[in-house]
Length: 490
Ligand code: HEM
Image 1: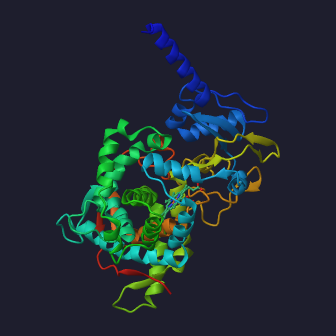
Image 2: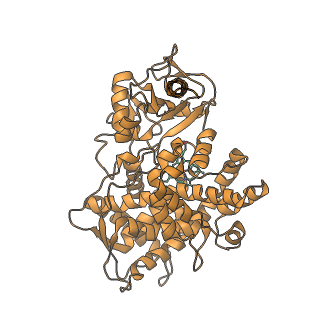
Image 3: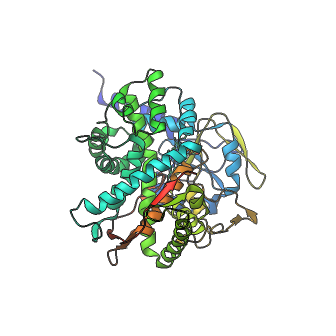
């Protein structure tokens, strides 16, 4: 038998070894300054409390490039909008390990030949496929708007009362879900509202899971995941005639590469997870509409003018036909959606550093970024930079109309970075958001119960679009005698 002191000594040595390997580091020549933090979780607490404030303060003290540590992950932050293009081009900055980290740590699966799969599958939400996706989405949206006003048993033009999250889930999330997987069958657990509710719970733990904490530590996340994995098998989903091209392609690709049904389920969840962001955007679109009456009037004027113009070319007793080009021309709508995304985005653009890399700062000075670390641009810190966006903490619906943005006297080429450089769904997500907003404003009256407000919850920084701090109650009603709109492809 060894004395207790032996075990204590061994445990201390093991802890010190772990600490030195994962937490402690000595700054090398040319490396950026490390922001001082807690000896165990590094800058995690300050980042979780308010990431934008933390990054702005660090920039003021240490300049635009500095190192932080989130638990055991060392990250170089590049807080400079002019470095965006160079960051995206740098071949030593690799997104694959990040995408693997999400698949593995959060959704418990691995994608074989991931780069090829994402490259090919990504095409199924772009170009002509984007148009097909939009047409499917718009048909489902008509149906979900209808369901949302009738499923409470009231008449079609009566006021409905609901939580705003619930209302957005019944309309936007349900339409997105069906445009991806087709319409659910009676008795399916994998149906949009159950999936929305389970995701809502599951997402609360996303950041912890992403960092590698085991899901077993979070019983609510385990229970939510139990529901989310109850999906029809791939054969069943593929037999639906209204399933999206993305799911058809990804499922076939995974089957051909010998992946299991469990892997396919995991991948379906990742795909829903990225699409869930568009639902979150829809929450904020409605919320800001109810808060900024003037902006809502301007938007309605722009929509009414378009509908009037297009009505002249449509059958008198049929729907008014609108094309995607028409939607793209709408400047007020475009600005409203972009400003909503600017205001509520919370995402990191993060890459894994494959080799020691000298990165040139805007000043011309070079900093060394260490192999094995992570390197990131943090779009929300740029979106809330007062030198780029005047009064950045204010929602300004027309901010993006005919606007250019500058920093240090030079134009910022990519002022809205919420989609990173790699998101294949950017155009689809923005177009879905626009179509949703256009229809909502044109067809519905709505208001938030007096005095109720909410804010993007800064504790969820790291999520693509931030959830609200709390829900608010919405009253909404279909307007009478409004002509139906149809999204057409000409
Ligand atoms: C408001 C909605 C959305 C936001 C804010 C968003 C944001 C992002 C961001 C920040 C990334 C990481 C990109 C980078 O670091 O360069 C990403 C990746 C990705 N997004 Fe989106 N996204 C949205 C909607 C969508 C939609 C609708 C789809 C699919 C239809 C999609 C598919 C993907 C995929 C597949 C990736 C991984 C790309 C890769 O591994 O190369 N996203 N998204």
